[in-house]
Length: 234
Image (cartoon, rainbow, N blue to C red; front, side):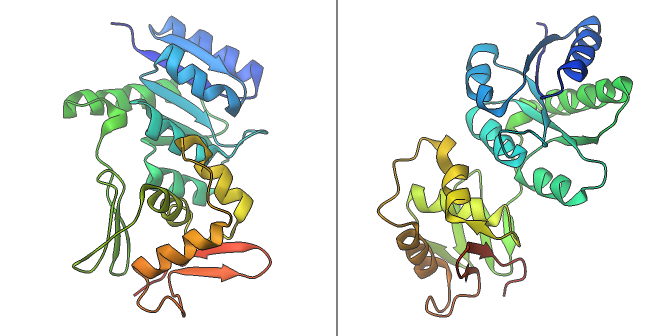
């Protein structure tokens, strides 16, 4: 069966060049130029692998990477800015399977695509379903596949809404996120509208994961801006 590749890229000329090269190499190829076309493409095209440009004008590429992992079995190969290693690190932690800095040679892109798909086949599972390692911050562990949270030996009781919200912060540890950014990041998860204030949910998460919810060390409030998840934790 012909393997299917989807490219999310706003540079039309680059996408056309890549599409022609990959089609000649035996793959089925589809392209969307904006992040807002991703959800429909995942359903209609059911790609085996998504080539995702992180620098899109209408969407956060890291959020799209998370959406792909949540809504499909596709592997993800990120295209990143050459001088931005942090996005690569965060992307790989979220679950991306590989990355390639721009500008790139089509032959290297093809080699990386083949390697990602080959690793998935050798493991006996679609590459996008490979188990992701838990996120660990000191004694706090977040298992993204099992959707569980623990502090040491204690399991933390969180609702599905609260787990998704915590995961948004943890996957962006060290980055200050506004309330609007947090809401935007969880929008693709078919969540119901949050209760009147996102702060209510933050309070409940702190009750579950903080040693002292009144003096939090994990989820910190940045006055006038939003929240930040601490990189260094006990």
